[in-house]
Image (cartoon, rainbow, N blue to C red; front, side):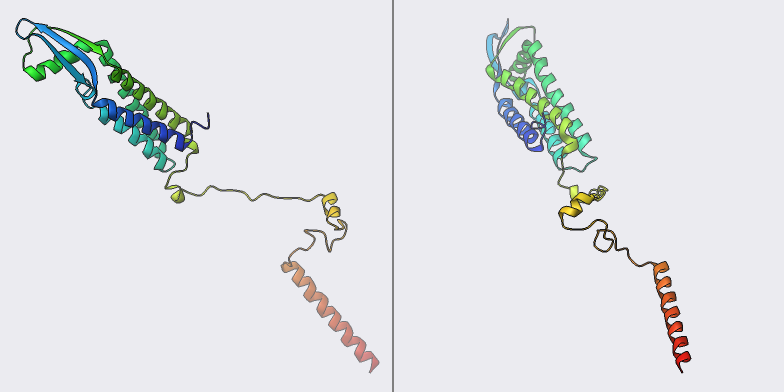
Amino acid sequence: MSTFTTKRSVILLSLIAAVLAAIVSGRTWINGSLNDGVIASSKVDVTGNQAVPGYFGIALVAIAGVLAAATAGRIARWPAALVSLIASVALLVVTLLTLGDPASAVKTRMTSVTGHNGEAVARGTFTPWFWAAVFAGLLSVAASLLALLGVRRWAGLSSRYDAPMETKAPTTHESDWDLMNRGIDPTDTETAPGSHEPDGPDTMTQNSSSTRVTETSAAQHGSKEK
């Protein structure tokens, strides 16, 4: 699953869905016919944008949300991915609504062509381009869901401006056996790691006192010899 939720995989899937939606939006989804007493029998083709006004616009919102999630900061990625999912679901739903009533799309198209909106019997059959549109909606939904699943692991283009994560430096401790393998006597306080401690204020005071005592003793010893 982690392979499919990577940024590259999600963007690629979303681009495929958007390109397919762009192609099918201008293709014929429905081959229709209309029969009434005025214009007799007429045939009309309904394209994707005519059957679903704004179809390609919704697809653009879906891919824009994925791209925003891929480039935004750590906080903005989640709302962007959610917007993409909402748009993708809307794209699929409005496409499937046409499946339930193709005659309505045929009648609406015929009215816009002839200007006649009287009573008529409309029929419509779907072309393969309609099913390609359904497939584009499914791809868009899948891309948005994968984006939501993997967005927490993505690094946006603005990650350099994100607050740095606090990391603790690893602490290492060598055992006596490791020191002996390196040729170091662990009982030797002079060579064992950590045996040399920096001089603090107390150590400096003790050294200074020892120096004064040594100097005083030497002076007393010299006066006795005289």
